Image (cartoon, rainbow, N blue to C red; front, side, top):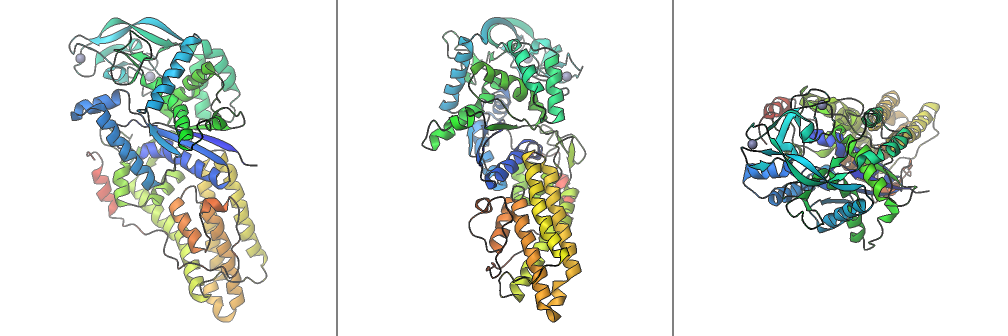
Length: 556
Ligand SMILES: [Zn+2]
Ligand SMILES: [Zn+2]
């Protein structure tokens, strides 16, 4: 029975290149998940897009003397290029700048207004007397009222992760000139979050399959009470408020960005020629919806978006929100403003995608922060991808290609050791199946590598390269068993290493794609014609560690 799976992926701000922290946190996990489900024969809809609104864009535009929309489209193009090179397989990666997104966002706004979940009220807004302007949330800093962190922004505290209102900050000041803001009255719209607290609490208590960090954060947030939040601002970059008298204000970015999951699904449906097709993913209660995000985004996906969905009605709530922790770089906290980051386009200009995908998944920050270092990148590539997995593939395929006329050899009777290896391959596929479906990516990849190690030991024991001289049948049998394992590994590793897995699939003489072949141990047929093999991975020079480390801290 095939399932339908909806995958929502965090919307990156289109104001800077993507960095490895974002990839490990929010972009690689959903791609692994999507590729796995497609291979299982499930119907996947994976959407995201670039977030073109919000002050991160206007700040960057002011710095570069460009318009916000020029900045947004420049980075959007770059994102599309990065996804293609890294193999992040979105069904649609759109932007919040489309007419469709504005229309859907305004429709949800008006529906919630109609139902009384959005109301109008006067709010005091920070206004800088020096700069003579209202200050958007990110233009204001102060001390967090919850944890005492000094650099909290007007929308969120980066230390404790709590969303904030600018007025809650202690000792607030303007980021541009440092002046303490005055607060001026301005009429705005508020989302009545307080009305959803009990429903949200009851719903979250049922989500026992959520990651502990996500569940704990959400519960403690809800138990602390829910405040209504303003969803409009005194800015001119963003989606217009669909009511007269509010021409100088816009819908605030966090309210409309989460709607992107829904508007993108509608855009995707239109692109398939069946404009109603989104319903199969949003209104069928059997469909599970997953949202892949970094931990700073948890409250928007476990509280605010679910509240909006409950208010709007008739759409599926999230099934799981497997938020990741943070990736540090060479032992230090990643910081894009200080350039302490490895930028994805920069990486992709020099290296292959699969070694990065390998390292970031085997070292994924699923339950705690993990570190990226160039030394570890080289070590994992050389010792694990090249020496363990790549070497297994290459020594088997080149030897068979040379000694058995380029065809899969015919095995003799399998002894118990050989049977165990084949059983192990089946078992590994089953285990990885369970692990990935439960969003345990790191462990899943480790299981595949364990199978490669065991098979290397099996070949060392059987030494088919030696036995071929005195017992060709024994050699053929051991090599056949190894080829069965390679067939399992091409499937098991496909979600993680799609490029090299597809190559292996072709070297083994299979047609089409790994995905088409399904999540199963497809036994290669004796006599099946192989393609001339090439090494799947190349060894990296230790010298790159110093070169790459020297780039850190400098602008890309
Ligand atoms: Zn805080
Ligand atoms: Zn100022």
